[in-house]
Length: 385
Ligand SMILES: [Zn+2]
Image (cartoon, rainbow, N blue to C red; front, side, top):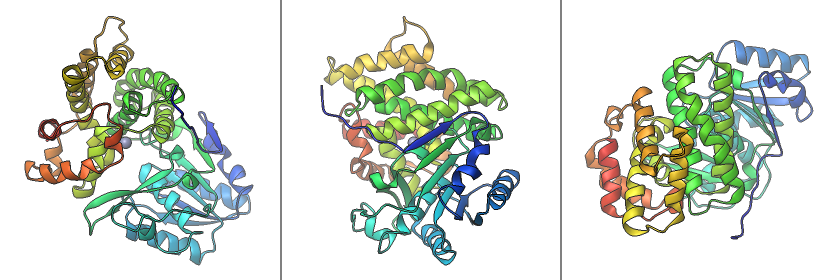
């Protein structure tokens, strides 16, 4: 068996209603709290009130979009000006990634660009950040348990990762009740991102027995629950299953690589204003289909073929399913969830050569179970546009 490694956050608290434990837990770790959130209204007000009652001071940093080099600088400035000793993110992947970078940059010298891959100097992060607590309010990214943050640079038209084991949050509080108010469209694309983040590590070249176990638990949960939460956002049992699937996807991707869906998601999201989950949702069935065909043609004995068959059986719930049935099942799910094509976000065939070139450099592409040809990569984008 190959060597493998598994690391994650020090503490994961999961369950309906666990959000109520946040203030007392936070108080034990810090007093001056930078609350990073894209949300407004009752949930932020409630947390702020609880924190004040515990004797904490709270400074709110609003997150509007996925993090950029500039938005990080503003947040960092807020943390320093107010002498914050803890960062707490409450929101989707954007709020969590923003908080993650602010907490690490608050203690490390220099600027964000010094540490970024591709567009920056790629320096290694050396010093642990401020204590960081992550509380997701969507069920999709699993960012509460990953060690990287995706940062956009509008000047360069790309999204790049800041990555370090030191960026793992100290505590992840996952309360499925927080996801109940998500609108159907956001539920759909974040949920398909969660499913992608379970399927890609399961067939990836760096899958290991621990990530396999998480994927085998998460894939059927996501498959059985995604349609239900889309139809009825108040279905608490299905919301809990999706929150767990998202958490397991984050644990899996942080410890095994992803694949071609995420290989393309970075460049597409850097060049066009499309939410990460929406890109993944659209690409997932197409990448599965092309991967499967390539495996059958060039590597018919590869174990990834059996893994795709196992995925099909997990999503359809039928022991008779073949690998291709899993692809068809996910295509049908995307139709039910009304996932739009990428052309609706302005992606056109003119960008295909550039997107292929950029995707080839991504670390996710290296996890894909088979090396795809230029023609296959082009086909994936043409079908998704
Ligand atoms: Zn993703």
